[in-house]
Each structure stands twice: as C-alpha cells, then as structure tokens.
Image (cartoon, rainbow, N blue to C red; front, side, top):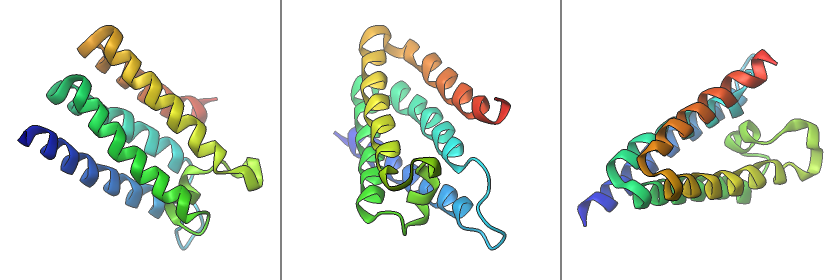
Length: 140
C-alpha cells in the first residue's frame, strides 16, 4: 500500500520540478531559451524508468497519471503560464493546446501498451524515445 503512495508523491515532486525548470526556460530576462519542450520530454521519459522498475505496470500508470494531471493543469491555466509556454508549439497559433494534448494522449497510450507488451524491457524504449526525441530536433 505504501509503494503506490510513494510513487505518486515522487511522481508529483518530479513532475512539478520539471514543470518549474522548463517554465523557467520559457521565461528568462534574456528571452526564452531554446528547446524547453525537449527538456521536458527527456525528463519525463527518463523519469518513467524508475516508476517502471519499482512498480511495473501500475508504477507507470501512477507516474503517467500524475504527470498528465500536471500537464492538464497547465492546459487549463492557459498561455499565460510559463510551463504552458514551454510546452506549446509556437507555430500552431491559437490551437497550441492541441500541440500539448495530442502528444500527451499518444505518449500515455504508447507507454502503457509498451509495458503490457514487453514488461520491464519497456524501459529501453522509454530511454530511446526520450533521448532520441530530445536529440532529434536540435540535430535536425
């Protein structure tokens, strides 16, 4: 009973920390820094690995739920929030919330399906996706 609570609290602390870091990257005195969205993706994918190794499917489920609630909270607060600004794609204009929600849903489905299909080996996929996504945009 205590493991789910600890995973939830750890996920909350990690998710809020990531939101603070990338929100700070989006709003600096010199202007926004590059790639806060990629930093968030990298952190979130890498953060899923301990949740998987500690709690298997339900660990990833708890982690994903907590991170999703944090992201949904940012979407509800809207564009004035630095964390929202860090996650939204600027080039889509007024539909920027979709550039947050669609990847959120697809990541949740993919993450849970990966764990169901290959169990703990999904950690490799999480790391590959997180590192590949973070490196892909700046390199490309």
